[in-house]
Length: 174
Picture 1 (cartoon, rainbow, N blue to C red):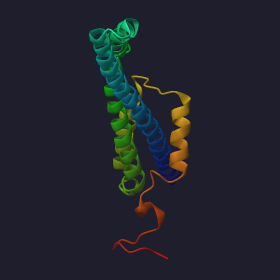
Picture 2: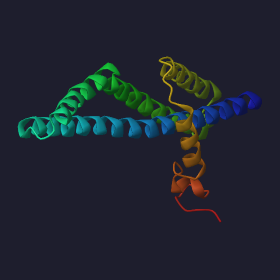
Picture 3: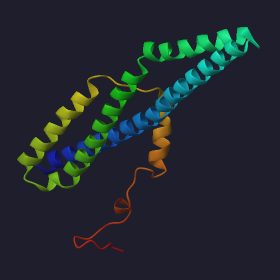
Picture 4: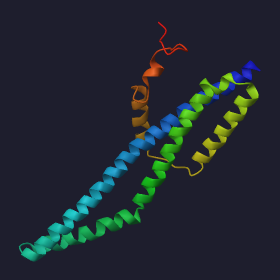
């Protein structure tokens, strides 16, 4: 029975790591998508304003036409690319994977101390949640996964409590 428990603990740890890497890459991609969205909004406003000013001033009419065109087209490109929907879906997925990371970690560290049947039921429920979280097949370009791995390996997602062994009374062991 210990072999099965150990295998289940190992799998919970593996899934916690998978979840962490996934949510980290999603959060990095979200940051970029939100920057792109802000740039599109600002670019559209600036282009429209410059275009209107140029048309009123009549100094460079062709520049005014181009800027008004860009001020009109940029929001349409954002809508056509469903940027807002993509951001919302990615944010929702990132939060779920973040929650799954914590849940798998707790299952491995705490749930594994329960009677095996309770631990197994807890792990099975988490595996089911993981399958549901993966079902939309949300992905990000490979470069975001690589950036996330670098951040994880550099300790950006490590908590102080994880750095040193702790005793039950809150102190650290030497």
